[in-house]
Length: 312
Image (cartoon, rainbow, N blue to C red; front, side):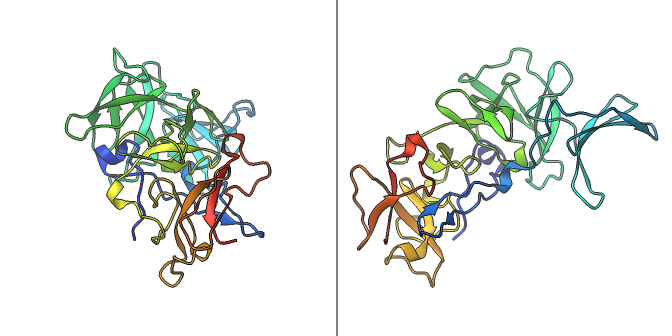
């Protein structure tokens, strides 16, 4: 079964979604816990306090900052160059965390290849009358980048593909290793770190997310759950095979198929298992018990009662 992918905004408008998040890991005790790393977050951003003196070579000034250089040619342009080993250099004209575009512009995701990758960035002019977070917004879809009407620290998500209107949501503040979002939201880092919205948090056992969304484990910060736009018809039901944490329907988690007799390990090594409340345990599977979802002790305080229905 193909993995379901959250829309965020680019899916609705551009038919792409975040890269597949990491699968969960199992501890020696058998208790399943979410992984704490993700390929979607991209390289960690450099410290803003660690710098060295610029050096000039062949008409180009390069300032090195913790393995990342800012290359500024004499024509006044510039880009962040990430040195990826074996002489490979990846150059992006702006940083979505620092918002270092010229005054009156903002840094947005870009699909330079035109293949739906959306893993680069570019600077675009700010709307002269920008919309604030929570306000309706519009987008002007370009072949390689997004132009929206939101203010500097917001991005237009939930875009209707016909009307090209959505809602401005806050952009994550801070940096990749320590993101900050308003209360009631969490930072979701996707597309190799260039798409960084603050999305509403949710309770996987509580009230459902708004229509067209599902409460899913935040693949870039597995200590919380967020409402992600999904295709309900693509989500797997209880005990169905799955490939990753975004594949299963509400109230379910993609886990080791050996944890439920109803799952078939010959068909898939992972399947959708039910989440449960440790304070009021109830499980649908034969001989299953409601055991702690988290392997950490203590677990995240807000999820202390979250359990997973599994064989002991």
